[in-house]
Amino acid sequence: MPVLTASGVRKRFGEVHALIGANGCGKSTLCKVIAGATAADAGEIRIDGETVRFTGPQDAVARGIGVFYQELSLIARMSVAENIFLGREPLRRGFVDRPRLHAATAAALAGFSAAVAEAVDPEAQVADLTADQRQIVELLKVLTAEPRILILDEATAALDRDQVQTVFRRIRELKARGRSIIFISHRMDEVFDIADRITVMRNGVTVLSTRTAETTREAVVTAMVGATATARAAHARHRPGEEVALRAEGLAASRLAGVSFALHRGEILGFGGLHGQGQSELLRALFGMVPLRGGRVSVGGKPFQPRGPLAAMRRSLSYLSGDRTRNGVLAIRPIFENLVLSLLVRDRRPFVARARLERLVRPIVTALKLKFSSFDAPVTQLSGGNQQKVVIGRSLAIAPAIMLLDDPTKGIDMQAKEDLYATMDELCARGVAILLYSSDDMELLSVADRILVFNAGQVVAELTGENRTEYALYHAAYATGGALADA
Image 1 (cartoon, rainbow, N blue to C red):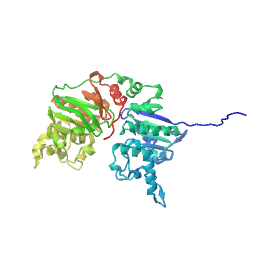
Image 2 (cartoon, one colour):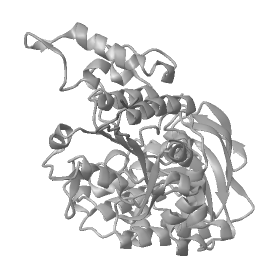
Image 3 (spheres, rainbow, N blue to C red):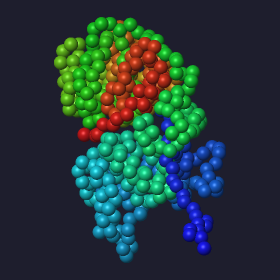
Image 4 (spheres, rainbow, N blue to C red):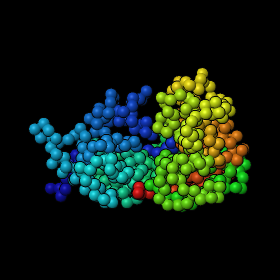
């Protein structure tokens, strides 16, 4: 008689598969296709060997797919409990069973108690939570549905190291239970910590897929940018002067920690790195739109307290956002009013001298190659690129000594971009200093004289001269570990 007999034994192990790539390479789009949120033009998806076709997200949910999206989908004026179990509320006699809902939420939150500084009340409104607490609530929305396949798109972006490790413990528990996880992160140390396999995407295609143990960080970064890009460096286009136009020392805000730099007259200083690492927040803080918690700023060698946009404009700073809908044109107002708005706000004139203001802005309109039928035409009659030129013209109307450009070419056509680049070159030649954040890495490399690379609210590298390459940019953005807790 055998001492031990095993027959038909099966053991299923899960896997954590990291998906990584540069900005705009297609990672999020691929995940949306898998989740049924976006239709594929070609190809197929198979689950357990069976080809599936999803007509919407609910089809994917029915097949056990859960997705944490990079853009949080929480409803601010609903409670934590209502958000986590939205559409899956426990019922009693046809009505939501509030005690069971509260208890289920409390149990879910208990598993992440070590990840939040203060206990989260299930009945608290999401609007009152901190960024890291909202991130945890969004994650629990997905986890409490018990998906077989879990897609995490930048799920750790707003979390500090300890919070990330709490999430990783849950991921490892799911993996041990046979669940499969697609993990997207811009933090290379996280990828190598949690992933069994790594797939690298570039320009919408897979360029590398390997076991984590069989590759290196350098090989992954090289795959992201391509071998030919590794050695290519752009050359500075401007001749900055010795005079410092703006100096920042130890700046701190909600996601900034100890940022210091000097911006010279006639220079374009670029802010690089992955999205949401503090670049836009720094520009907005310098313009007085985001409060600073610490640090010092000087403009032209004199102390400057950025208490608001008006104070910034009166110190000859202008701010330009690439988000035309939120921080750009006044859609219901004419082109003239959009062009002169900053002037009117800065000078606080009780009367509008229309003829004088038109004479002032006409050279700007000509330089920007902005074409329209009349100053009185609604700005919405213009194309997106020309609307952005109006916003640029508004910034130039106050004759700034320092320009803060926050992803200014986002969503505009190539000709409009080239016109803006030419304008920036002319401004630099006249001694204007420019801080430029761009989500287009090639734009940053070709336009900026120096690049400060941001990671988790800190400057982790300065790229100058021959070091200004795609490889160096991505190596600094991805390979530097660390995260900053949201204050």
